[in-house]
Image (cartoon, rainbow, N blue to C red; front, side, top):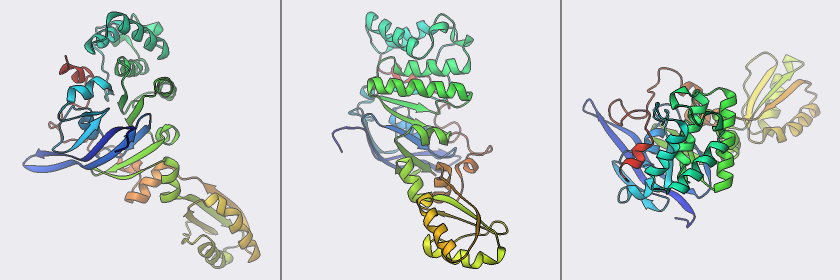
Length: 351
């Protein structure tokens, strides 16, 4: 394990028994995350993402395997883990009747911060997360975006080394999502916080995460930068439309020789294929087609998405895999507690 590793798990596995059947929600989760990284955990509903986060944050114990988070073992020193992490679950963490500022001060007290320290930290978070105008309102009066920013503030009040975010922007409008990300990135830049999150918004992971893990059926099936995953597993989608249908056989042979891939014919006069670094390949391909007197009417190269990566890995897209009617929660109903976890669940056993 690298000395700068802040999350390290080996063989982390979680099984549940449902109706006398053993269900393995997470299988052999073995990962290392370095200090300061922003890691996105992707996968369809039921893939095991939230169960993985709950094990790493000590909310549920693993069936087998080990992990250390911020230098503390999740099994032998869960209180040490909890004191050094922030966790933002899928639902609102605040007490509805409590005022926003009081809620943050209470959270600081739960973590053992002195009066002055928790006051300074509360004021800092209220300002940086745009909660100044609602600081004296009760939690139940907040909008969805304001509640989510409060959730993040609650997770950050004790300046954790590692921040776990489970679907942080689900249900937010685009502006609120963008604002939330701006705040998370700014706070990370200021404090060097490691951020480990699950998300269903692939464009978020693509844009912000330095590293992407893809999970399916309880296993991590890919782990790299978004750019590397897209380049290695998907490639650019190239579409060529010819002037003359009769030139398709010649064009196909040129494509297969130059790009070393097979091309499909989705429409008349059209060849389509995916190729690594396809955009860079396109000029060479067009010159070669011209050399063979193949006239190309239009040529497009579309960069791959993380959904294309998932399709390449599993034969289905993440959008399809996450369609309504899926399992929803990672763990079978009634086995892993509620979908939303109050952050006080983390502090409770440390007090």
